[in-house]
Image 1 (spheres, helix red, strand yellow):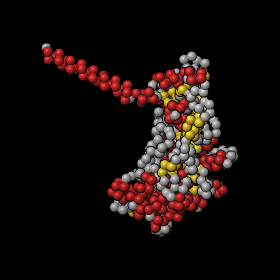
Image 2 (cartoon, rainbow, N blue to C red):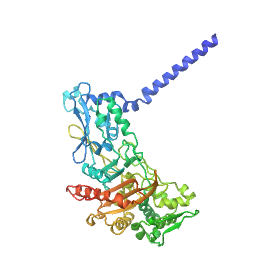
Image 3 (tube, one colour):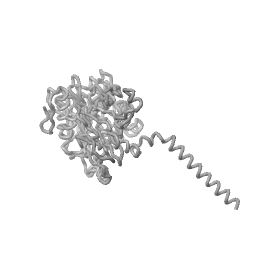
Amino acid sequence: MNRRLRGLTAFLLLLLVVVAVQAVNIQFRRAPQLDASNLNPRLSTVGQANPRGEIVAADGTVLAESVSTSSGLNPYKRYYPLGSLTSDVVGFSSTVYGNWALEAQYNSYLTAHAQPAQSLSQLLSPVSAADTVTLTLQPKLQQIAQTALAGRDGSVVALDPRTGSVLALYSNPTFNPAPFSSSSVATQEKAWKRVNKGDAHNFPPLGIVATQEVFPPGSTFKVVTTAAAVVFRPDLLTKVYPKVPYITLPQSPLKLFNDGGTACGGDVAQMLPASCDPGYAHLGLDLGAANLTTEANAFGYNEVPPLDIPGVVSGFFPTEANLQQNPPFLAYSAIGQENVRATALLNALVASAIANGGEEMVPHLLNYVSSPDGSIVKKFVPTVWKDPLTPSQAAQIVPLMQGVVEYGTAAGIFLPADQVAAKTGTAQTGFTSKATDDWMIAFAPASNPTVAVAVTVPFQSISDTGAVIAGPVMKCVIEGALALQAGLPATGTPTTCSG
């Protein structure tokens, strides 16, 4: 009997210890995390009882605001004037699912909080209000990207290479944020199921293709391979590679063919504009695994870009050891195929680094945060993230990318006056059948770049190319960005883009 009592006592003491440990865990260790959680009902109550701050675009367009409902239970409702055009960036504020995208990123500013006292009465009775978050995003350029993609899955990222400011970040599929502001739980639940259901390519609308989906970058990666040669093996820039339709890969019976089976070769100045696959595969083998891996990582591969929005993922480039063990992989990696992956954001950063004299700036959507009285609470300061090239090294690559536009794979797409430097990419991939992921990266004007862009349109026909599919989209975005920067009107369709 005494043994049973001692056992029961020990068991009860153990339960008390477990309860005490969990109480300490929740009250102290996890308290900050739980306080800030989107699922914290206290935050939802505060959000409903007080208006959230506005999210405003670079041109002053309101992207998110709280409007009065004349309701005692829910006095304010979140309203998104541009709807699906900016929903992937702005996100939503939901009483059921919490805050998403920038609504979550800058929630501490957008939620009503105590403001500095401006008078004795305010000192005695503190005033709570929310701040305004102003972005670098240009709605007109966002609209051009949406129009040019014409409903196809894909994404556009446009940056100011000098500062890292995000001028456009648009992805398909996207979603309507309005249902998440509904007072009806059923309406929100129905919308939640819809935005989390993958489309034909398994992309959920709630995700952001531009920052969360990775694809083989194809021949756009040849810019990085060229950079590796510039940095580590300048002698290879003038090496003349044989003009052949394919090369046999080392330690393998596999043959790597040029697109269409046509013969190509020459030095780098001849091969980059023509996007010569056998020549660049050979160049990658000559560079070696260590040099190519080092330069890919210098551009930001295998590292999450520090964009101020939740859920950003990294691109992928194989390790030096992996490539040394698999020479055929090294050849394919040099042309951005097989085991290389990039987001549109990362590829836009690659283009921006070359445009900005080798300095890759931290990408950012935030311009500044202002208080209700108009004073600046926080302002983004442009900062260098990566420096894969020196200014003189970057300057060697610019004319090669101009050659892509003047007489290479992107010839005839752009207006000569825009001085575009670009690189096309067509990565063969598999989904339900053979398809292509079609890319283009570009910047302009080449003499003094003010915009750098990446366009990706995945899962296109096997006969399609980056020039044919991504090229018209890029034309619209480049022309639109330059027009807006010049203070001119900008429009964008796949057939005519000039303002």
